[in-house]
Image (cartoon, rainbow, N blue to C red; front, side, top):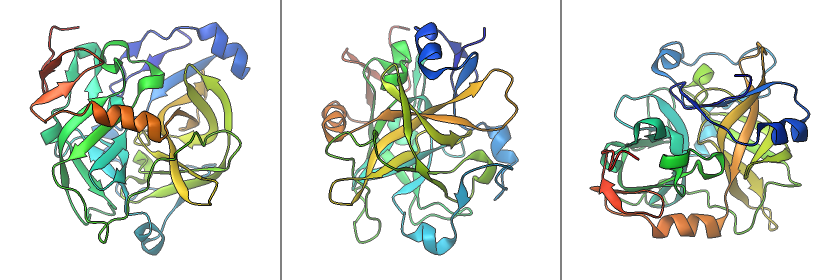
Length: 294
């Protein structure tokens, strides 16, 4: 198929409205790929190096120290990583596909999820575990791009004198603003990198295609914009990358799921204890189980 939505494990999902977004973006043939890093990619990493032509830059230790809320997240200890952000002392935001496999009916048990804020070269100020986990509405059944969000409540809130959270904006901030993405791509997985001066391009089924680049491991990365008072706020998270069919560059355009305080509030109200997982708007299932297989 010329157009596919792929999970972090490379399994294709049906993607409706292909002709619509192909026309809207002016792309003859594209692939939409989820970005969860694979173990093989991480084996190549070490600190790594950015590919030729990349618009990202690697932050040094002093620069990264100002961004301790951003870190690496894994569905289990030692598992493949995504990027995630502490948005409140006890709340971590990332992409739903980092913590679930809709085709298999699997959702990561919250207590096994590990978040390492401020991660750099194997070190982090803390290794934090989850107490509760919620995915975007019906994501585990539909894998809808617009619902590729996951909110993790931590077992223990992080003291703000240790790590200062980066809050979500109180209003939509993606359109018409300069955007920055901070991430742990597999090519430089041991340090934080950033891309600045990005812009939103076009809507895509409730998400937004941007001029930013994305590679594996960037899933869940925060898209930062300045609000009306000039304060940095999370305006979205990276879900996928959009690439032309046959394109050889290792990165594609970042596809971003918008967030604001109202949307996060809805997710937070659905958080449940770690022994259960909130799925869609339906019943609760044991954490890590497949429920009725749906």
